[in-house]
Length: 275
Image (tube, rainbow, N blue to C red; front, side):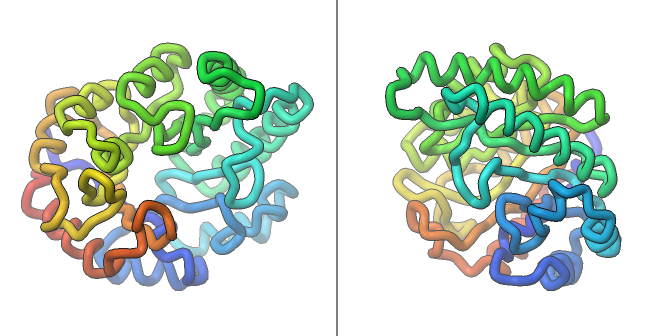
């Protein structure tokens, strides 16, 4: 298996402009990015939805490969989610999604990331998961028609925050790829071997170190064995990107590392082990 392509995320540099974030990422040796669209810090969400040609031009001017574009249906919010119980809201989400797919086509993005949802008042977990899968199955043809891969990330605090539930989502919405970030499961105390089962459903990977109780740690201080992660990806013949994604946000202590230092350390680890 040849070396997997690598990228970094603009989400690591949320306090920078898009141009600043891209310049830092390029200076660190990356030629591709995951582009965050959950806030208007790096892309103007209203312009994305308006189909503004200038916003497309601004992103394309970065002259970097756009691997993935992440989107939330409200700025930097988990709601409205794909499993919103209101059919009118879900219809609005679908219309937003059509416009986002148009944007992804124009900037040359490989995939679009939509989060898997949360439990709403009055919903059972089972009902919420069923509606999420139904909604993903409705969004999938829109993405495929546009030549864009629809992906989702099972994450802490979502409907699908356990390894087994993530597998169930992949089975219930076949064709929707998973983003695998071991940190979301390791911080909950799941053993790495239990998370490994997700690799066969994975089409994109986020990399950052973590440990039980902490979503993010310096590379040498956490418990994820990234050499074994790479071995597992080789076993399933994974051929997507490895995205280094350290962040600075007040969520389970994720303000605790120097983003640039840890990005460099992960980059160097991959240079040595991603062969």
